[in-house]
Amino acid sequence: MDPKQPVDSPDMVIAKRLLDYAKLGGFTFQRAAPGADGPLVGYRIRDGWVDLIHIEGFSRDCFAWRKRTSTLLVSPGALIQHQVEGSVLDVLNEVLTWQPGP
Image 1 (cartoon, one colour):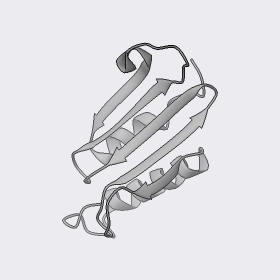
Image 2 (spheres, one colour; image 1 turned 90 degrees about the horizontal axis):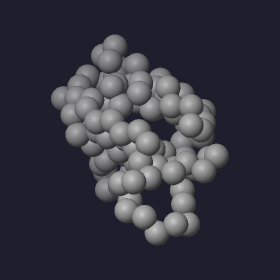
Image 3 (cartoon, helix red, strand yellow; image 1 turned 45 degrees about the vertical axis):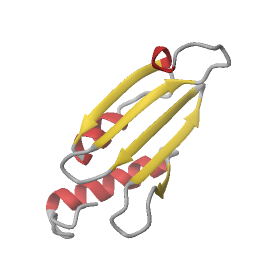
């Protein structure tokens, strides 16, 4: 996640556990760029919603959003229900509170 953050720091341990909880909650993660420190992107699709998590660094450049799936032609922003950005801990904590549907 961030080469400046020690691997065994308490915050890094918490972030890894939150990622594990996200995986248990149905998220699938993959690297968006090559290398061990490439951005991590996770998504899940359920109950008419698409949830996306983008982790670029540990303390910044992370974001997530929840968007309703729709076959209607509307502006993409009109379908977004939740959006969050900040540190990996802030983003994962917020996303893990999102309920399956509205």
